[in-house]
Image (cartoon, rainbow, N blue to C red; front, side, top):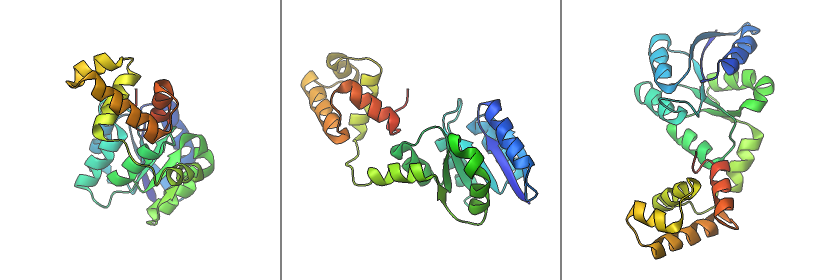
Length: 204
C-alpha cells in the first residue's frame, strides 16, 4: 500500500483527494494537515510514502514545509498541489525537494498516476507546468533588491515611498524599476506586478 499524507488548508480539496484515493486498492490516505507545521507533525507520526502539499497556506507555507520535512527525512517524497503554474514557484519547490508538481485543476486526471510515479522514484509535473518552466529557463532572474521593489510596487507604493522604505534614493528606485520592466518584458508597473504574481516571483 502507498501511504499518503494530504496537506491543504481547504477541507474541500482534502475531501476530494480522500475520495479519489479511497477508490484505489493500492493506496490509502493515512493523515491530513491544514498547514505546514501540522504537515511536519503528521509526517513524523505517520512516515507516509507520498505527501501531497499545497503551497499557499497559513502558519507555514508549502515550500518551507517541504524544506523542513526533507531536512529531517531526506527520502521524503512530496508532490506539490497548487493552482499556480508560475515557473519561479515551481523552481523553488523543486529546489526545496519536491518530486512532483500538479495543478489542482488536473487532479482528477493525473493525481493517482503521479502518486504511483513518485512512489516509484520518478519525478512528475503537469505538461502546462513543464512548458512554463521551459519558457523562462534562460531568463535573467530578478535580484533580491528588485524583488523587494516589485513587492512594494504591488502594495501600491510610489517610487518616493519605496525609496524611503528601502533607504535608497528615488533615482535608484527608478533604476530598479527599469531593470524589472526589462527583465520581465513588462509594459509598465502594473503589468510587471501581474507577471510577478503569475510567475510566482511575488505573492500578495
